[in-house]
Image 1 (cartoon, rainbow, N blue to C red):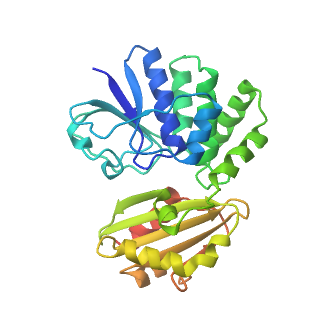
Image 2 (cartoon, rainbow, N blue to C red; image 1 turned 120 degrees about the vertical axis):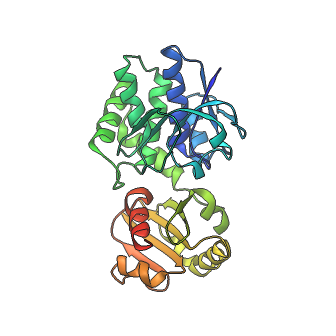
Length: 302
């Protein structure tokens, strides 16, 4: 039976490129696999696939009874709706572990900035040559998921892998990075609702469900729409989320703004040392959802 490899819902560049790259690797070592996606692609990801002349993976909704490999996620709430009815063979990820399964499987999780950095290591481990288009996808994903190596999740492994691949592709890493980040931070024409759902993930705390949206920008013009943002967040939170956050990361100024609504805002504010004012807090660095915001929120809501 063919193995289906896919990333999380609301796919980003890392999850899509990881699925494509790992599928190629698996097929080179004797498996029969195909990459899939669980939702429509973002503008940045479409640009990357077009840049390296790689076909967009097919959309899949029903995985019941199918053999699957998960990349860039291990939380069932981020996966296919019927993932519990699939046969999971393997997980390759770089996020916090929130996984339980009835059988032993290959489970590869490393604290890197990008899942594709792990997959590049798997190519080396299996001594499989990486074609140019797959090198391009891996490099693009690393740049995207580390915000051009500025994210707090960036590791030496990510940067060294990117530099190595750039040499193999004979491209200027800095120039290519700027190309990707320009597209990644273009939010022109998007409504507040679209921005909140652009990169949105759910987490379960002891107090209730937590929703965290995140976007990256090249300026803070969006802050002029704070009233509109909070209004939309209140509607989104109503009767669904205990806590709702919107992370806005400025990759030019290396700053992060966090908007937050919560049923336990005072408790959360203690974790943030009382710095939340009018549902907003500013940080003089780029924060990531997985390393910075999620651990603090889950700790506050214990």
